Image (cartoon, rainbow, N blue to C red):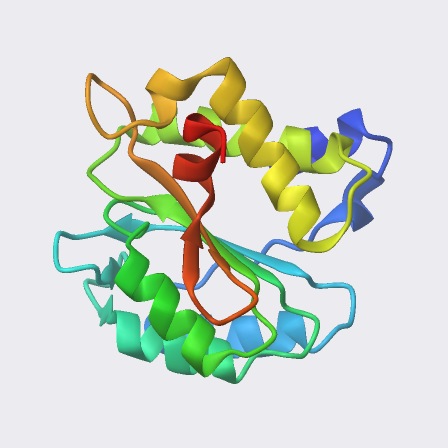
Length: 188
């Protein structure tokens, strides 16, 4: 998906870096290495998730929300966003842990419920298409993307009526966890 998006925006193959990790240990190594480069601002993890909030690897190994937060704490200082393309990964509790352990992290996105791979992948593409098309910076960029998606497809983002339960949590100024999709749909 990123190869196509980067090509569409004339960024070529240098617009993103792709790594495959088949275990939590592999993910720790990849995340630390990729985010040590100053330009790595967003980490996208496409994997399975279960109802307990754990990420599940092809090896069968699992990564708990606490261990994921610890992994993020070891990431480089440029990391600002985490996008979890995984079922049950869009929970406020996971975002809170991530924000507590990784002070530079500003937002965490994911799906609150079980989702179809194709449907969620299409939403992932729409999110990052709007991300690349935005001239805004920092958290304003994410807020703009979420407002645009919420305006165009609120039913798809919602948890009810066939929606995907997509959530984007942001670290507020006073440390509270904001839910950007809810704010955008309500017009806050």
